[in-house]
Amino acid sequence: MLNLIPRDEVFFVMLDAAAKNALLAARQLRNLFEDFRDAPARVKEIRDLEHEGDKLTHKLLDRLDRTFITPIDREDLYALSRGLDDVVDAIYLVADRLLLYKIDQPTSEAISLARILVRCCEQVDSAMPLLATKARIRDVQRHCSEIDRLENLADRLQRDALMKLFEDPQDVMDVIKWKEFYQVLETAIDNTENVADFLRGIVLKAV
Image (cartoon, rainbow, N blue to C red):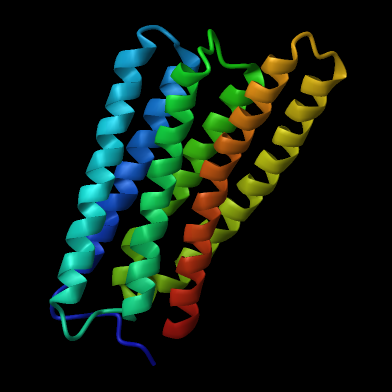
C-alpha cells in the first residue's frame, strides 16, 4: 500500500498553494464577468495570478528534481502540478480574449459558465489537502465526482449557448468570436476535470 505520510510534506503544501491560486484566478474571472468595469486592470490581475501559477509549478518541479523519495509517485506529482497550471493558463486565456475580441459585456451564458468554473476550482481546492492524510484520502473521490457533475452541466450550458448563437446570427464575426470564446471557457472547466482524473489515479494507488 502506498505510504502517503512522508517525512517532508512540502509537495502537499505546494500543491495546496497551486490549487488556491487557481481558485483565486477563477473567482477573479467570475467577478470580472459579473461587473465589467475597469476590465483591462482586472485582466492584468488575472495575468499576475497566471504568472504566480507558473512560479509555483517551476518551484515544485525543481523540488521534484532534487528529491529522491517523494510522498506520491513522481509522475503523479508532475501531472497534478501541470494540470493545476493548465487551469490557470486557460483562465487567463479567457480573460485575455475579453480584451482581444473587444467584448463589451459577457453574455448570461458566459457568466453562468464562469460561476461553474469557480465551483469546480472550489472542489479542487477542497480535495487537495486530503492527499496528505491517509485516513481521509478516499474523500477525494467525492470532490472528483462533483467536478464531473459540474463539467457535464457546463457541457449542456455551452451547447445551449451555441444553439442560441446560431439561431439568429446578426454578424458572422460575432458568431465566430463568441463560438471561440465559449470553447476557451469550456476548456478551463475541462482542465479542472483533468485534475480530478489525476487525483483519482493517486487515490486508486493509495487504497
